[in-house]
Length: 253
Image (cartoon, rainbow, N blue to C red; front, side, top):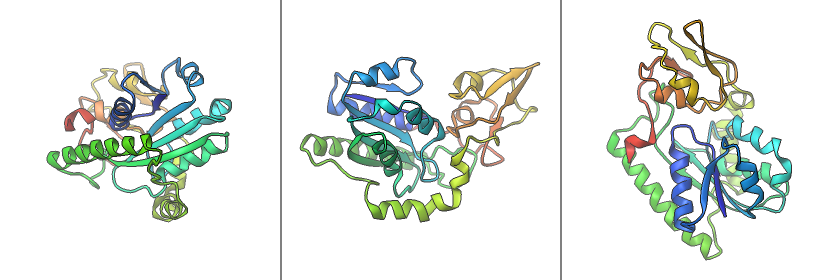
């Protein structure tokens, strides 16, 4: 078994590592950004894959990763974990259907509510105690899911037809254009930016650069919120106009 993930503010990474440790302490969890991830995937027949849901959809970077390696998934047994701030309907189902098209066998799905990662919007903001409570509940749900998987009756979160309807009419139908392509809406306040370069090194898409002393954002943002959660000057926004909270998982552990 191997665990793979895409994670922005650390929620999904934490959940995948917890799941893998509970299931098989000797197994490895790696990011899809790791150079050797394909070789490692080819060496395993059972995969746990996790990602943060975006508007009831798959992050564009993850969809491109799956589509770019179509032969990797054939006949693999895959358990899908989707993390979210509130609701996704069929968050796990979206990736499950994509992988099934490449010959994967989906063994189950798990939805985990975690602290909201959209730091530049007021919606879903909770107290520190509430966020820590969410993490604790997610940990418990992971432990229960692992036991169910070992018993051969894994959870099926997001995989049923009514889940698909919930995801479609709950968010995806209205926000599909936000996840169809990469975003060009990342904004950097040049008056606040201190040019530290943390955002440059953190961006999984290499979408941010420093040119002539100015930090510049391109048009290939995958909305992971890493840069926004790491910027020491709170100079970066995406969906909103002001940073209300920098939502790294370390704050809630």
